[in-house]
Image 1 (cartoon, helix red, strand yellow):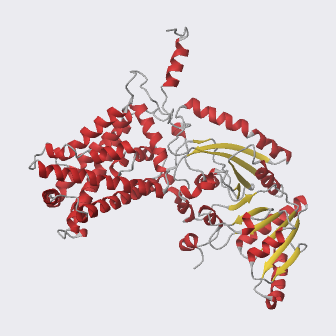
Image 2 (image 1 turned 30 degrees about the vertical axis):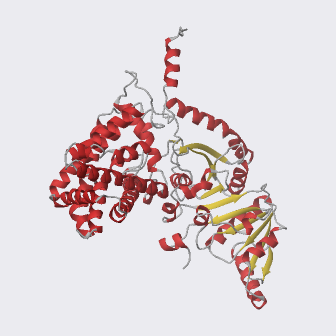
Length: 605
């Protein structure tokens, strides 16, 4: 064996080999097969980033699978209890099997989530509302899966008569236990489960994880403790047999177990383990560590007060811009090599505003279950590579003599980060591209409904570019604030680059043509577009009229409908001929409005 003469080189090679795919440490720094508490914490943060940014559908069905897997635990416990005559040790031997499936399989279990998301929240990297959202969805999935399992055991003929009797006895024992006894027994169970999660992230191999999970969950029946999802399944088994009312079982049995599991998991394990780590615990786990946190207000109120989550890497500083400051345009970039046209458009619009600034942000989405390396060196390399790529963007801005700054965001999210960046940078306008080649084109897999329940932070322009040419622009209008934004863009393009503007208004028949012409004339005068070409179409077919007129234009400016532009984008409902079949570039515009929550979610009723 040939050894390196340079000890530092040998160590760096060994450390590189020992890095896990997630980027968190794969081996201990002092003892080769043992982690320090800081390294365990870094691994937990890596998992928490993926979990707390997961989509609602993903979380719910993962939780549902976990809840149904609990049925295996109840089934085997009752069956062995019957076959062993109620022996307290033999009947519990297969109790942990459902939990083994859940933890080794990576499903979402509520009691397991009292550690990773809480650790992220304690660091003020995720907000309390984000944590509560995560818990609620996982718990709803667990309970749904447990209900399906209880129904299957009740009416599916799975139990033998002896096992069915044993199942009733086990469930009845829990229901007959006092409220405070349930609470404290559940607190110890919560301690065990959260402790399992901590030890699981300290383990280096699957065998070690299996042994830890098995022994820990075996302690629950042996210690006469209670787990909330198992208890919920047992309660419903009794309810389906008419032995207890559901509301009584929830209040007197499930609720104290839920509170006890939560308290035990958070206070007795998560907080204690968190405070045993050093002040440097985040330095290699996140870019800039504790220097990048949610503000206290954001931490408490989440997206209602700004951001609800801090991305893995975010090199931007808050702009300090206010309503009286220079106009600021944010341009999200997925590929700096191919999206200079977005900066061209943004700079063209900025030239009409004195002192306007363009902020281009390179958003890099990390796919789920493929996290970045959580070490400072890797973070710096990502930032350096992004800065090099963004030089072309800055050069484009310089050619327009427009002030431009750039930043980089690395996150498991993308669409939400656009909203957060606009808010954080006090943007007046966001100019973004759309398409399958951009990560936010898959925004439906994230949490779009969260963004739709709050007002947009600024104006939005979304460009579907087919070789950007702004020489001849078509602006269909029926009035409204979103058409006002389209008009502002058209007027700016006409002033700055001499764009020829055509206004289109569609009416329902020839008898409405005169009123349509009057409307278009008055609307154009209000928006400084009196010199535009006017077209009134009496077919009543808006999309058809736009498509016909598009043949003679290079750019189409379309305002959002009552449903909202972003709603239609994230729900993939923008399949209009005008967007998908015309050869022209399409610029979609949405202005923050006063739509109610119901209107923003479901459109005009």
